[in-house]
Amino acid sequence: MRLQLCSVADVTLRVKATQAQATGLGDALWYGGSWMKFGGSYQGTMYFRVVPDGDGAGLRYWTPGYTRCYYTGYSLETIGLGVVAKEFIDGELDCTVRFVTDVTGIASVYIDGVLLEVWDAPGEVAVTDLVSGLYHAVGWKSVSGAGYETCRLGGATATVWDTHVPGPSANWKVRLDGDGNPAVVKSVAHNWTDWVAWVGAAGDPDDYEARWDLYAAGDWDVSQVAVDTDGCFYGVTQEGDTFLSTQRAVFEQYRVGAVPNLSITHHTVSNTLLVTDAGLAGDGSVGMWKVQRKA
Amino acid sequence: MNYSWSERVAVTGVTDADAVASVIATHARLDLLLGTGGDVQVLRMGSIDGGWQTPVEVVSDEAFPSGVNLQGRYALATVGGNPTKTVRFWRLADDGSYAPVGSAVDVYESMGTAQYPSLAVHPDNWRVFVATRVGSKTIINSSPDAGATWHENDVDGVVWPTEVVGLQYPVLCCDKDYLWLVGWRAGVYLGAAGKVECYQFTANSKLEQVGSAVTVGPSDEGKPGFIRRPKTGEMLVLAPKTAGGWSTLSGNTTGIVEYWSVNTGSAWTQQVFHEVP
Image: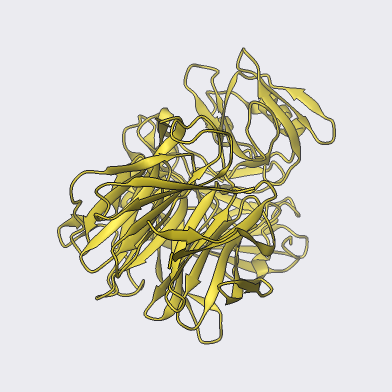
């Protein structure tokens, strides 16, 4: 739900990063930053990114609805968190983000009691059930590793059927290849058409924000996707919208659904091995077998 | 091996091609553990012949559950987050709910997404091991206190978590002397998409590999089943077959391939293929 008028909501952040995330890259601190997702649904998702050093130490955040907000002048040291960037990279910290809305719906954002920013766009803050209490980081979204080839972004899911993309449970990510430096790109757009429009407007591979914006396909309906020989990609939504990307791109697919999985358990009472199979049967059933020593 | 397999019985009411399933058992209970739709459900069984009760959601927003009998009480490992980065450990409470135990094991960002944790318990000291697929590797963490704390760094001269690069879909089994790790490694092998490998470690705080990895046999992608019978020492590995082209098994039939070892995993023999419709 959205923040209500005259409400107060606190989000507790535990920020954790490792040195391994920030090694081996010239702009390592960008890639060493961590994404955190709050809330269990897309509608209730707010993305935070902590940028511990480099191009403006601080905490960046944006919400669904394309509103990307960030505050680059925010120094972790000046608000008394007691850490400096290097220490932060190696460790973790806790801080509380407080959202306070007035009678007009304008939200003020505080971090550990220090006013960070005032949002004057009521309704843009849509963190699920923020008012009910504390939230904890439930996941991470980051790109890390010593080189682009090892970068990984997860969480972008789509239900895709196409010969190029084995499905139905395929996770995918897109890498722009505009300047020879592939970058993982995701987007917060709600559908393909919006996302492609966004890419067309902001998909500059040299733009950090473009690189880092998220495409979280989530539950959206994408019926087909493919990559042409030039590296451009196109798709068809289940609503019939079609698009062709304006960027060269590389698709990578990987499963997020379960693969076939088997298990064996010894039932001591009956001295029987119980075997289960899942993801193997054509009808989606989970099977069970009893395995016993022959008399 | 002189073992007979029953007919396959489909679990009542479960039609999820992406489900993760396993059975956990104590002397008193027999439950089917099901990861489906982003939640963990338990279907209590009336007997080994089935009699599944209505699924009960026991953990929400967690995936890839793995269960173990820990001191006579169920314990679970799951992974959470989006993408999944955190391995959590749960114990069955008296009221039938599962409560988280200890601190979660955070998987380092650089490693990739965490999936398919597998638990094993040392029979004497109850040390808990959890092996997790993280990207294209397996990491093993250990808890000396029933999940209350997990080794994350250098403990007792051992760097945790222990990694096995390239091994996916891990399954653990432990006796008082050794910990065995079985998993899948990608790469065409005898016509299959990959193969199952078996690793042996000393089962104490100094997890040290014993010998080299042993190839169990060809396998298509998926999580194998693995057990070591405590009394006989026989080891059974089950591998999924989802496509044709295996040089050791003809036809396109989908099913389960059965491998046995009678020498603590040093050598494996393919035995029987069980078709899954």
